[in-house]
Amino acid sequence: NTNPVTVMGLGLMGSTLARAFLDAGHPTTVWNRSAAKAESLVASGATRAESAAGAFAASPLVVICLSVNQNVHDVLEGAGNAVAGRTVVNLTNGTPAQARELATAVTALGGEYVDGGIMAVPPMIAQPGALILYSGRETAFETHQATLEVLAEARYLGTDPGLAPLYDLALLTAMYGMLTGYYQATALIRTEGVKAAEFTPMVHAWVTAMMAGLPRAAEAIDSGEHATEVSSLANNQAAFPNLIEAAREQGVDTSLMEPVRALLDRSVAEGYGDDGLPRLTDLLSARP
Ligand code: NDP
Image (tube, rainbow, N blue to C red; front, side, top):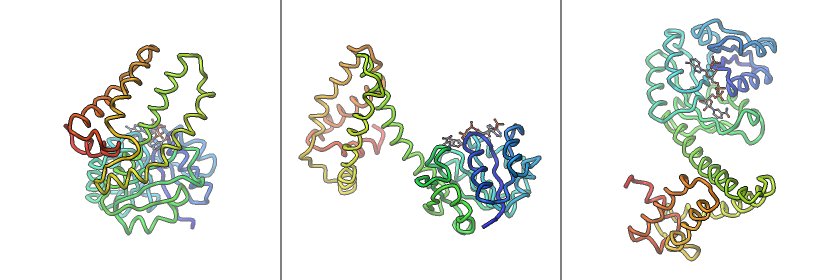
């Protein structure tokens, strides 16, 4: 299709989104707080909106990608009545509560709100494997789905606008756990002069092998059946201090590791020592 689209926010991600729409042949209007960032897109055929109101007026579909959701509130305030009749797809990272507040604000202005979580970095946009999660006004999503598919696979999660950010933040939570583990591991290994490039294939293979156990972990979490023939919390609790002691001996920061030790200690103290690691989801489900 050649439906027109507006992109507001031309940072690293927003400019990539705008270029993807342009490359796919969509008449694309762009707006950015500092106007200079629009120049290369305008040179490629995009139309520059002179104001936030102009950006909303230009297209039925307005994709917003700013740093934080407070910026989105400010932009909506600046646009006022121009939001009426528009579908606002907000791809700015934020919390479920923020998304619900923005949905209320957009609805009050006469627009339709869809929130989105981008599960990709800019080079992945418009490439196979990129995923964007959406939630909010279903009919608005369906109307614009084909256009949004230009950016990435578009997966709709439900009418609650908080769902896309909830999934997004949950996936990012898993990512940060993995990545900080990797950075901690490389800090430890290089104390003996091992290059990250040399060590990384081993990490990759190891973590990939461990990830193969996730479906079984999910079964335990969902069923509450935590008996294990693989590895008990008590054994993990007994061994985990070695990770911290070795890091200390090698002069490496241990502040990321201490909370994991505390969690394992708590699991045993609360009587779950014979259970498998997936029991930790239950312990984390309520603050102690
Ligand atoms: P950038 O820092 O590159 O861009 C930030 C954008 O927000 C710029 O357009 C900036 O405008 C605008 N902005 C900041 N403050 C204001 C304000 N007060 N009023 C109006 N506009 C404002 O960030 P990214 O493009 O990387 O990220 C944008 C969003 O996308 C974030 O929420 C991020 O979490 C999310 N995201 C980014 C990914 C990535 O890999 N980059 C991956 C997935 C999600 P100006 O140019 O005038 O400063």
